[in-house]
Length: 333
Picture 1 (spheres, rainbow, N blue to C red):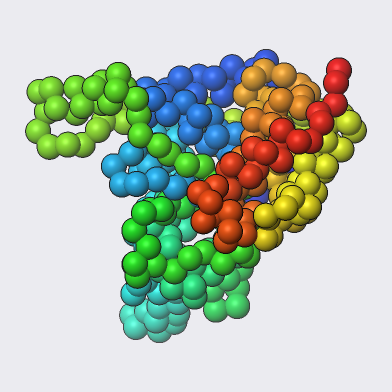
Picture 2 (spheres, one colour):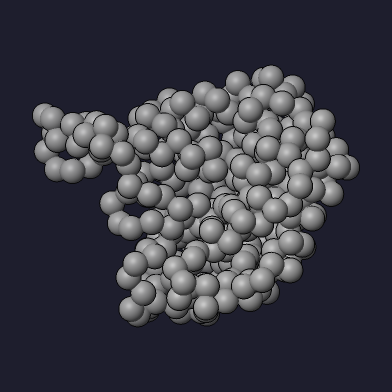
């Protein structure tokens, strides 16, 4: 609790599971109006939010990745920053730096764009490893060190990084240590025909330009309430049999034929944290095996690497993970 309570603020009031679920479902409805036809993406972002995790969004340009992050920030009444990652971006451009003030005769700190509640790291794989690594401390510790002094970020803090899976020329693939910091890797696909028609109609009718208006104009909750949601999610009950199921599922990725690198213990932790978020979104105070299955792909797909021969055969990481999920027996009630 102390980790989430902002310095100097009163202790956070507890939320019941029905109260928390009602708030989440109100945010869910609002976000779905901004990102039409992407219900699974919206649910994944809300699950990561209440689990206190970060999200890697993968999809081709034009699918609304920036829009959904901005809509999430407005729904929670949080501050929003966007960093466009480019090959010449420096670490100080992300975290901030010390600047000498000639008038005052001393150094002062200019804080970077990471000092916000919701950070959009756009096309993160276009920046070199040194700049990517500047996010490691921020994502893991919730603080930035400038000139040897630590500056904590105000919670909640959530990094949502995007990358284009198609265009790889001139990119710097994220190393495993960086990928492991993301709770979920969410893939955004094309909307179906009906939703695409609705999107085109909303953008083109009576409007100049192609900007899509964010539906979340009125916040559903404030930042303190969001922290209460996170505390509520952390207290969702996980039965020992369900915990054992999550462990067996992750360990099975290390033993599956054709898997070059399986998920580590952090993958199991992410699976359980995300399953708690899924249970809360569904209005339950306990995690079921179906919750674990529902979040297994986004929680594990970036922690598993398959052998080249499977890629040649046309199989993907998701195909292999789905086979693992199908092969591990879930506990019965």
